[in-house]
Amino acid sequence: MRISGLITSLLIMAVSVLEGIEIKGKVVDVLDDGQVKIYLEKRLHPNIGDNVQMGFHVPGEGMIPLEGMWMVSEVEGNFILAIPGDPDNAGEAVVGYEVVVDSTGSEELVPYVEEDEGVASDWHKKGEEYFAEQDYVNALHMFNKAAEKGNPESMFKLGKMYGNAWGVKKDFSKALEWYTKAANKGLLKAKFYVGNYYFHGMGVETNYEEAAKWLKEPAEQGLSNAQVLYGFMLDRGKGVEQDTSKAFEFYRLAAEDGNPWGEANYGGMFYRGAGTDKNYDKARFWYLKAAKKDNPLALSMMGELYNFGFGVEKNGRTASIWYQKAINTGSPQAFVYTNLGFLYHMGNGVEKDLQKAFDLYTKGAEAGEAMSFNNLGAIYLYGDGKPVDHYKAKQYFQQASEKGALLAKWNLARMLYQGQGGPEDKAQAIELFKEAARAGHEPSQQQLRDWNISY
Image (cartoon, rainbow, N blue to C red):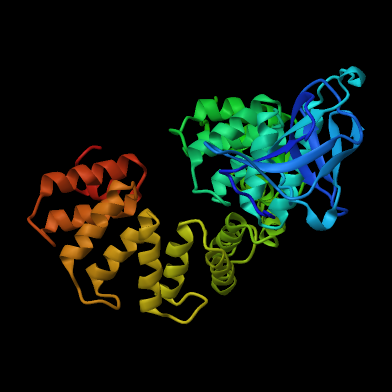
């Protein structure tokens, strides 16, 4: 009888035909030459030459022996090697299963210290080999075995498997559980993942304070992804006190390490003048480095520089190329849809195409971009490529206004004041003019001054 593969309901056992001292262990490898490597859990060594019979255990039925006889061929530390007496007539061992060895010479057995880290490292290595072959079932089995022995790399790899649905159903909660175990063992990259999960609310409720707690150390220890995320939290004051100077330094470190998100965010600090002086030339330098790596933020911002002439000559055509590259990544900044749509709407640097503008605004609205809602409203208000529809225009302006777009508040206020797209409501219109005016919208300020209304 020969068995192969991973049969979880069966327990491979190695049992001596002679009675002696029982030593439990696990099969950790099957070598190319047919020898089986076994890790022993007991602090005793068997003797070379012990006869061993391979078999599998069926619950309720006991052990079912395999054909052929095996024997211990080598003893080294925690491990033994066993060879088949007759290679052509021997059961096939399976990695990862438990074994039992009966030794014949109890008086010659010697104690030794278990080396859990060593066997865990072997199991992890074997798991990596299975993983590289996309044999996720066996990889998962070996990583679990190593993780049980406290191997942090296996704990981390289990987190990756559950987080990415490699051989298992995607489960962010389980992924976080394994990342946390690895992080508690001191693994820096695991600490980043724990922080990242808390930041994005993956497998747990979003908790910026908890995220910052996990991210700080790997950021300080030079892990560039952690530097970017922790820098962002400092930049925006999420979970920590806002400190753009510290954010600037973390972005710099990540950028100088070649991290594209570090480069893009570092460029953003020069673009905004946050934590440093505003400098469009330096912003463009770092955006361009990240853009060459297809970073969507950098590609989006290169479009902004050329669209509005920040540090370069204004050029709608060049802007449109960068915006389209950002869209091609599948994850552009939402404003890209609005701004590229507007270029097509106006025919600025590209051939005027109202349908393309409408489609881009629609994608921007789907992404939650306030000005895309506003521009869709303008299309229906003025009939640019679509029939005039005041009701639709008002709905789009309403959604943009709720997202804080000042121009949309102005547009909605005018429609309410004139009773377009619904009943006239001058009181609500004036309140919207005031909201926009207080936020610095000059046309709203002028309108209220014309009516002698303070804001």
